[in-house]
Image (tube, rainbow, N blue to C red):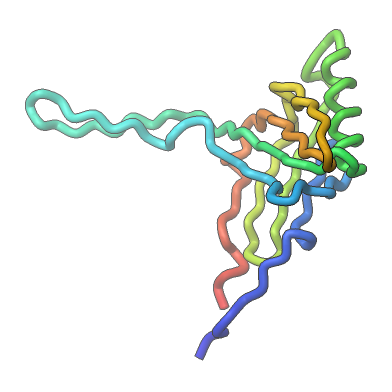
Length: 150
């Protein structure tokens, strides 16, 4: 008989950007990776012929939500400024690596492109900051739930 329960712990998820470990997530934050395009676009012609056209876009977008008081916020803010001020964007590789040892999910990209600056707000309690990163070719390296075999 298999296990009746498994533990999930966000603090055990490994996230590095530019080789720097990122942590200090927001109260309901974390990391969300979304694929930019589907694998196939399917069309049905007037005569009923179904054609699946491969899209060939393996990029993803990662949204990382951090507490504004965290070292992770400072680290990503610094990397964003380096990339923003680089006169030749893309020549400085900033790799992305996400590994969940609990279920085996893995996403990697050799380059990160910061697509937005995080919004800044001030209130009674420390706020959250969301960074949006474009991950070229991330689907090529993606592994889904490899540790869930037991």
